[in-house]
Amino acid sequence: MADRYLSFTGTAPGRFLTRRLGLPQPAALRRWSPERPSLDGTLLRLVAGKPDPDLAAGLADVLTRTGPHPSGAQTGTAVDASDAPSGQPPAAVVLDATGVRDVDALGDVHAALHPVVRSVAASGRVVVLGAPLDAADHHQAAAQQALEGFTRSLGKEIGRGRTVNLVRLTDASAAESTLRFLLSPKSAYVSGQVIHVGADAATSPEDRDRPLAGRTALVTGAARGIGEAVAETLARDGAHVVVLDVPAAEKGARALAERLGGTALTLDITAADAGGRIAAALPGGLDVLIHNAGVTRDRRLVNMPAERWSPVMEVNLASVLRTTDALLASGTLRPGGRIVATASIAGLAGNAGQTNYGASKAGVVGLVRSLAPRALEEHGVTVNAVAPGFIETRMTAAIPLFIREAGRRMNSLAQGGLPVDVAETTAWLAHPASGAVNGQVVRVCGQSLLGA
Image (tube, rainbow, N blue to C red; front, side, top):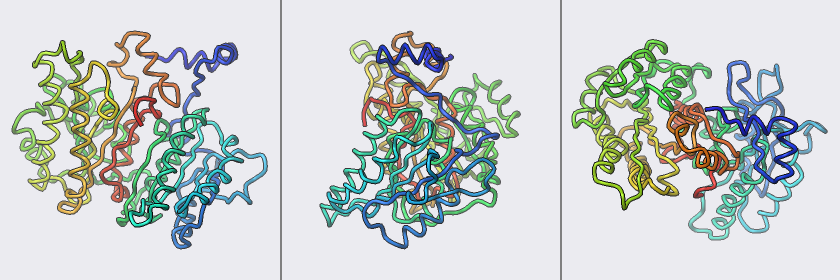
């Protein structure tokens, strides 16, 4: 369903009226397209504190490859503040705050961003780089934790479709896929997030435009909505996509698989033998497993019978646990594989009328945090989750008008996301070079005002 309010605020009368009434003024977001795959403009590189020289040098090299660039340029243009072109708004700003170790150094964060944040282009990006918290140095831990509050607060005030995120890292090269994602139009609806990147060696794909070429990806609940967008995006990135859905959706699953050059697989994901049937259908193995299938049976707890509780738990959580265990145990998921599960902000912040759904999605978060280190150590597979907020789908289109409008506006970008926003985030986590991103739950919610 079209967001008519967003369209209205893009007109001169709409801007005037909403400004006078103090209403939200969402900006149309710049998303990825084949014609405009990158943000246009300069990447401004800033420093706060005293970063490690080797890390700073590696970061400069990575930003040259990953940052936005002027139209027609072949490589990124990363410049320091002293070299920034006068009057040209930066498309993105990266602040290296990995060397911030005390309260005084936090003043450098303010001094670096205060003069430039207003000038960042519409739909631009601000990425703050932090370091892991040092358990042996409470001054460093306090200063680095302060970056989270700073980043989330800036994200809520920056406006004009711009996003702000924090990346904690120890190795610049391991963060290349993450920085490439956050500094691109693909991350349009990801803001206010804190992403931890480990030090695992990154595997750079031969073809950056098709990083999943030669890989097989399975998407559950893929016949429509977010699952369909995920399947399309993984296919765009070169994957052979197995479109899995229930038998009732066979027609849609087969049509999508045919369009993408993939394979359709219909089965009940809640069946006890679902994992075994998937393994049998993929004798060559699997590289990417996307747990997208989900259902809702909303009702307040006092009015919720068991028959509305159980299906949600079975589809959203129990099936995820069973099939993941089965595919890891059978070796179907190959080393270097990726598991991306779908959580929800309802599981992180709660939502009235969704105790069943919120519980199931919080369970997905628990699965990710517990399994991720063991799956990487024992199978060479990463485990992460996306947590969508208000996404424009047929399900949200059926929500009553005023509740729907509240859902759209209650985030820093003052609008709903699109299925492709979840798909792009999923594709980043599925990327071969994202092996250092593990155990993360990334909200795709425009920095929803619900929860952190």
